Structure formats: structure tokens, C-alpha cells
Image 1: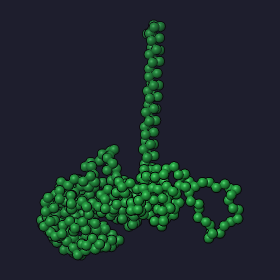
Image 2: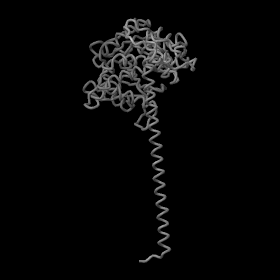
Image 3: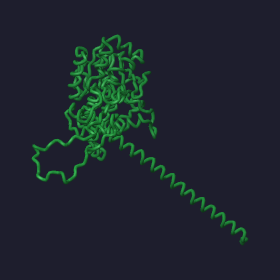
Image 4: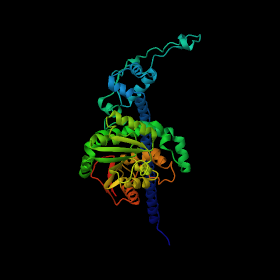
Length: 420
């Protein structure tokens, strides 16, 4: 088969155009890839900034710097250090970081950021005894006054606020401290117990939920389920499983004066704090706490059929053997009683990418809840992201006849009622 000169020339031209198109597509693809890389790098960079801000938040929380600024108003670095018994130079660095990060405002931004440099020629040659070393000269930057805006104080320094989030930094500090143990667990399949996470994690959990239990649980949430609310108003005995520092038990007792509450938790330090908190809030005569695993309560601390209502607030997903605990809770209830479970408001099915709330839940699970649940064997390994079907399955296995979602709306939590 022969081709004319014109046909050959046309084919060459077509090939050239096609080659340009392919090259153009490649260039465009490279640009798209570079944009995607840049966007993701920017996201990781922003995450690093957030991590650093939480690290600084931990310092501000634990050293009392946020509280001092909220209580006393604008302060200089030396004033903040004197008020909190901390080092002035560290206080200044922290204050400046908080200001450039937008957590604090500053009255005088024109003051130099660092002390004036000293010429080497003016530095005395003879060594000076540590006992006689003078304090460093005051920096012009130490005249800056930093203030914590009222809206920010609500989030960072008001433990009664429903927006209080400083304890998040405590929790992340606790999990970060256990990074070597987490690596071992992820490699070998073991766990990291709640006891290993220590006081930061324990106190963070309690502080994050305290405003909800004291200011919203009985005021807004439970009244949204009229029959649950009416049952509690009628009085009776209530079991609080996994009570922690006792804020849920205390909130229930304050909201429903006709009930008595027994809180159960296997963490001894939490029970000690719970008893102290109940006395401080004036409900120690109607609230008792027991240092015991709820799965072994029946027959040891309480008899079967003693309770009108039982609660399990944000704890079922942490349990290595939730079925045994739920079965014990069912046995504690009277025939017409019920168990209310409050747990994370997860998506009903796995979806990726997820919402910010779902990302938060997975973050808690990766660093804390799943390793804690797997620290005891055997374990079902639930993790923070316990979906409604999972809980319903545990409840059925524990002998409950039905699981229903209560009409209580909350961004973070879902409320279930389990019927014997």
C-alpha cells in the first residue's frame, strides 16, 4: 500500500499536534500534582503550628498564666512571673508567642523584642561567682502589657464554661508522654493503660466533661427525653457506672433532689477526688462512690434489682469487656428500670474524609482510648469511634431487649436507652 506525499505530510502534522497535546497534558498534570503537594504541605504546616499552640496552652494552663491574666487583667512579663512564681524570661517568651499566635493582645508592639545587645568589649573578664551573678538587665520588651480577651478567657481560663478547652492540651501532653509505650503497643498489639497516662489524662477527662455535667445535663439534655426526666424527678436509686471524678453523679444529684446516686469506677485516684468533690458541692449525703469494676458490683457492693435508673457516661467505648459491664448493669436494674448510655456522636458508618468531630474522635482513639481498652486482655478493642450498631450489638449480647436513641441533641454526644 502506497501513500501520497500529501497524506504523509498530513500524518506528520497530525502526529506533531498530538505530541504537543501529550506534552501539554504532562505539563498540566505536573502543575496539578505540584499544587496538590503544596496544599497538603500547607495543611501539615498548619497542623504543626496547632501542635505548638497546644504545647504552649499546656504551659499556660498548668503554670496558671491564663488564670492570672483572666483574674488580674493586662500584665507585663515580670508581673506575670511574679504573680505565678515563674521565671520572667520564660514568661516573656510565652507571652510573645501567645500574642503572635492571636491568643493574647498586646498594648505596645513597638517595644523591642529582645534586650539590647552588649558589646563583647564591655563584658567583664574576671569570672563571677554564681552567688553574685546580677539579674539580667530589664529588657524594653518587659514593658509590654499583654491581655487575655474575655472571649478567649472563656475558652482558656473558665473551668465552668461549656466552651472550656484548655484540658485538651493536658490530654495531648499525657498521650505524647507515652509515645514510646504507644509505639511498642502498635508494634506488638498490647496497650497503654489509663494509669500509665497519669494525672494529666485523668484530670483532662474530668475537666472537659465537668461543665456539661454541672450546667447542661439536668438543665437541657435529660429534660429533652421527657420520660427519662420524669422518672428521675420521681426519685429513686441511680447507679453511675464509670463515674470518674464524680461530676456526672454530682450533677444528677443536684438536678434531681429526690434521687440517691452510687458511682462506680475502678480508678482509685478518681474515686478519691470524686468523694472530695461531692462533699464540696454539698451532696455527699446522697452520693456515694465505690472503687470497684462495675462488672463485679452485683453481689459485692449492691444486690440485683436495686436501681431504678443506671447511667454510663462516655465510658463504654473504653471498656475491654463492655458486654460483661452492661450485663452487670442490667442485673442491677429493677424490671421497669433502664440504662442510659452517653457516648460519642459518631457517624453511623465509616466515611472518609470525615467531619472535624469525627477526626477528633479518631484522634482520641489513636492516642488514648483504643490503647487503654487493649491494655487489658481479653479485649474487644472498641476505641472511641463506637458506632450505634456496635453498642446495640453489645447490649443485645448483654441481655438487653432493645436499644433506642433518645431525642437528645448534642454536637459531641449521643444518648441511648437500653431496656432490660
